Length: 101
Image 1 (cartoon, rainbow, N blue to C red):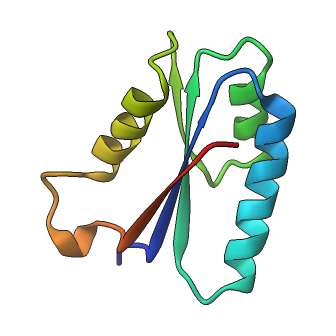
Image 2 (cartoon, helix red, strand yellow):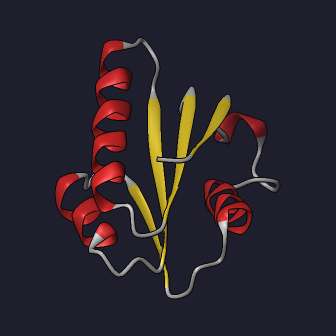
Image 3 (tube, one colour):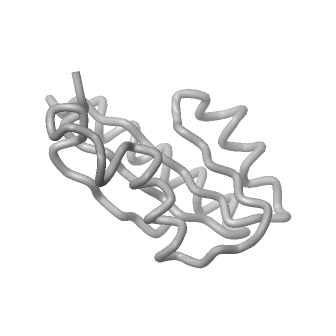
Protein backbone atom coordinates (compact mmCIF):
# COMPACT_ATOMS: atom_id res chain seq x y z
CA UNK A 1 0.00 0.00 0.00
CA UNK A 2 1.30 3.44 -0.87
CA UNK A 3 2.07 5.94 1.88
CA UNK A 4 -0.24 8.78 2.81
CA UNK A 5 2.69 11.19 2.87
CA UNK A 6 6.16 11.23 1.37
CA UNK A 7 8.61 13.80 2.70
CA UNK A 8 11.49 14.81 0.42
CA UNK A 9 14.45 16.55 2.05
CA UNK A 10 17.21 17.95 -0.17
CA UNK A 11 20.51 18.58 1.59
CA UNK A 12 23.93 19.99 0.88
CA UNK A 13 26.46 20.27 3.71
CA UNK A 14 23.88 20.73 6.46
CA UNK A 15 24.56 17.58 8.48
CA UNK A 16 23.46 18.90 11.87
CA UNK A 17 20.36 20.64 10.49
CA UNK A 18 19.47 17.52 8.51
CA UNK A 19 19.82 15.31 11.58
CA UNK A 20 17.48 17.55 13.57
CA UNK A 21 15.07 17.80 10.67
CA UNK A 22 14.85 14.04 10.17
CA UNK A 23 14.47 13.44 13.91
CA UNK A 24 11.54 15.87 13.96
CA UNK A 25 9.94 14.40 10.82
CA UNK A 26 10.09 10.84 12.17
CA UNK A 27 8.77 11.94 15.58
CA UNK A 28 5.87 13.74 13.90
CA UNK A 29 5.06 10.74 11.72
CA UNK A 30 5.12 8.47 14.77
CA UNK A 31 2.59 10.72 16.56
CA UNK A 32 0.28 10.90 13.56
CA UNK A 33 -2.06 8.40 11.99
CA UNK A 34 -0.26 8.81 8.68
CA UNK A 35 1.67 6.13 6.88
CA UNK A 36 4.74 8.04 5.76
CA UNK A 37 8.08 7.65 4.08
CA UNK A 38 11.10 9.92 3.92
CA UNK A 39 13.36 10.54 0.95
CA UNK A 40 16.69 12.34 1.38
CA UNK A 41 18.54 13.62 -1.66
CA UNK A 42 22.08 14.58 -0.73
CA UNK A 43 23.69 16.90 -3.26
CA UNK A 44 27.33 15.79 -2.89
CA UNK A 45 27.83 16.97 0.68
CA UNK A 46 31.36 16.81 2.05
CA UNK A 47 30.34 17.03 5.73
CA UNK A 48 29.25 13.41 6.21
CA UNK A 49 25.54 14.06 5.68
CA UNK A 50 24.90 10.96 3.58
CA UNK A 51 26.81 8.75 6.01
CA UNK A 52 24.83 10.17 8.93
CA UNK A 53 21.56 9.36 7.15
CA UNK A 54 22.73 5.80 6.44
CA UNK A 55 23.73 5.28 10.08
CA UNK A 56 21.02 7.17 12.00
CA UNK A 57 18.04 6.84 9.65
CA UNK A 58 18.35 3.56 7.74
CA UNK A 59 14.60 3.61 7.09
CA UNK A 60 15.00 6.72 4.89
CA UNK A 61 15.35 6.39 1.14
CA UNK A 62 18.72 8.00 0.44
CA UNK A 63 19.75 9.26 -2.99
CA UNK A 64 23.39 10.37 -2.74
CA UNK A 65 24.43 12.46 -5.73
CA UNK A 66 28.03 12.77 -6.87
CA UNK A 67 27.48 16.41 -7.84
CA UNK A 68 25.25 19.19 -6.58
CA UNK A 69 22.24 19.11 -8.89
CA UNK A 70 20.40 21.94 -7.17
CA UNK A 71 17.18 21.99 -5.16
CA UNK A 72 14.64 21.65 -7.98
CA UNK A 73 16.45 18.87 -9.85
CA UNK A 74 17.02 16.94 -6.62
CA UNK A 75 13.32 17.14 -5.75
CA UNK A 76 12.42 15.90 -9.22
CA UNK A 77 14.94 13.08 -8.81
CA UNK A 78 13.15 11.90 -5.66
CA UNK A 79 9.74 12.20 -7.30
CA UNK A 80 10.90 10.06 -10.22
CA UNK A 81 12.34 7.50 -7.78
CA UNK A 82 8.89 7.30 -6.14
CA UNK A 83 7.37 6.54 -9.52
CA UNK A 84 6.07 9.90 -10.70
CA UNK A 85 4.75 10.43 -13.35
CA UNK A 86 4.46 6.90 -14.74
CA UNK A 87 3.25 4.82 -11.78
CA UNK A 88 -0.39 4.04 -11.19
CA UNK A 89 -2.04 6.50 -8.77
CA UNK A 90 -2.63 3.80 -6.14
CA UNK A 91 1.14 3.14 -6.10
CA UNK A 92 2.01 6.77 -5.28
CA UNK A 93 1.81 8.74 -2.04
CA UNK A 94 -1.34 10.80 -1.58
CA UNK A 95 0.74 13.86 -0.65
CA UNK A 96 4.37 14.89 -1.06
CA UNK A 97 6.06 17.48 1.14
CA UNK A 98 9.18 19.11 -0.33
CA UNK A 99 11.18 20.15 2.71
CA UNK A 100 14.35 22.17 3.10
CA UNK A 101 16.18 21.27 6.33
